[in-house]
Image (cartoon, rainbow, N blue to C red; front, top):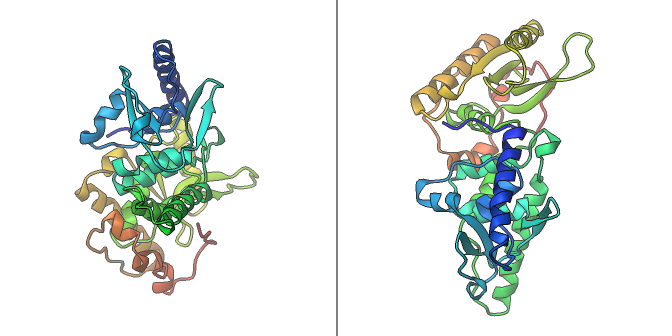
Length: 325
């Protein structure tokens, strides 16, 4: 299972890709914008998990053109057609690639719904140096694509939305800004898969008299339960991790740690959900049953997203304020 990438690692990947692009530019004057996985590398965005049948793009430099007639055959380049708005940005004043919002939409046909959400989160990191877009910007791009199709159809032209459009709309229901890692995102999906509420990301707390917030990876402030992902704070020393946990627990929080071994296997994810439910039972004194495992698509269903929060269903008074993402 892949770990999340640091800024340093993403920057190294970016410069490796720039070297490849520079070599290609010396062989051809063709300058279409770089796209898909090539754009992600140039933008220093963490790569989502791409299905094996689409791995070819990982081994090629990908560009995009608005129609098939604009394609050229250049060794080392794969050209894909994107008949929607090709929004671009320039990286390091040299390389033109599709914008983060355009890149996200273009990748939707190649990604499972969960990975599409993971990618959206990766583009909206808490670290400003890695923040590339917003929920509003992603939504606006979809709105414009929809309007483009509607206008074409009104003119009697046969136009369809891109494959992946509906998943993009679903993804925005679960995407969250301010995350720190892809593993944090994948961990966030575990509780709701088994009927628990979606935890909040990077919930700020203040320890003692400190005016500097300490951000919890995932939290249920209503129950004062937090889930910290091992490895998300690897910049700290081991003793710092121990002190962090001690500070959190001294502040009255129930602390759970998740690792990459807890994610990606149904039995282990269910066990993690059970540990979370057990902590909720400790706090509320009420039995909390898990439900059969849901798919990510089921989590996007209105019956799930509009369901009353667990504390209300338990008639439990929240211990701390709840922000509504």
